[in-house]
Length: 170
Image (cartoon, rainbow, N blue to C red; front, side, top):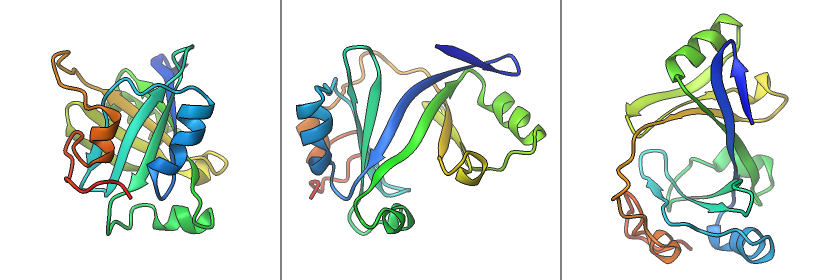
């Protein structure tokens, strides 16, 4: 379903779930609920997390996330969830991130984490205080070469995904 933000195309893409270990999420989201890893995923070494996505028969996706060793990225989130994790954010794709930022700030919304450094993925977050406690990620995906190798699930978990640090998941 496509929505609009003052004429800007917006569509829901995925729900992200974070836990101390992606391996603890797989029995539910892959085995029980039937999610399939279609390849891809890896590490964000700057922020300090590892991620991969599972897709379901209707095309919906769940992103699974875990902190990299030594990272503090999820510390406050895990503190709020008593160390267990849970739904971390909702992701919506926008056709023009700059226009989305302009429209939202024009309406008085607080945004944080604007990142336009990677042409493959530009993002900003709507603060949870603005969205009834939910972190909302607005992202503008860029062009990706269809020939790019998409790592298998075990490669991601072994630290050999995109930008992998070579350290296996716990």
